[in-house]
Length: 194
Image 1 (cartoon, rainbow, N blue to C red):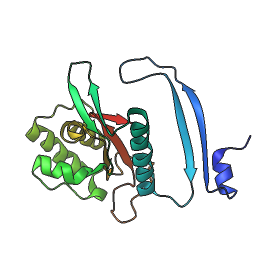
Image 2: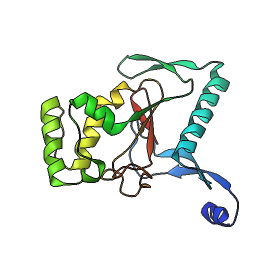
Image 3: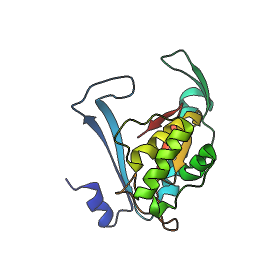
Image 4: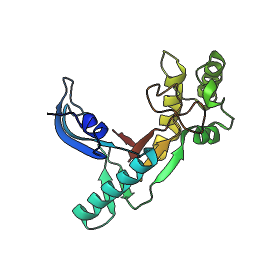
C-alpha cells in the first residue's frame, strides 16, 4: 500500500486514513491507550483552513448526535459545564492573552528562547503566583502560564493560536509573526484535544 503523503505528492489533493492506535501506556481519566485517529493530508490548505474544518466537523457531529448545539458536561469533581458548540469558535492569541493576564508586555517571539526571556518568565510566575516545578525552561513556564490563565477560560470550544517556536520547534513557522508558529490547539471544558 502507498502512504497517504505519497498520494498527495502524486497529485491527490486530499487523502485521509482512519486507524486504530494502541499505545503502551497507562490509562486514566484523560488518557486512553487505545483510540482511533483520522490522519489527513490536504494540499494548499493552511492552519486556518484546518481550524474551519474542525469547527464544521465537530459542531456538525454535535448537531447530528444531539439535535442541537448545546450540551452539558459533568466533571469527576461534580462540576457541570454548559457547552455551546456553535460556530465560530473563540480564537485566543497565546502571547496577547498572557500579556493581559500578567499586565506586562512579553519579549518578542524571536527572543522567547533567550536567557533574558527566562528571567522575565520567572518573574511572571512569581508575580502571578503560578507554581512551575523545575526545570524552569522558557517553554515549560509559558505552558504553565497558559494552563493557568487561558485553558481555564476555555469552557466552550476555543482555539489557542500563536504558539512560540520555543514551545513548538517542529511546527511551521508563522508567515508574518517572527518567532511564532502556525499552530493551534482546540480546548473545551478546560481540556485540550489532540
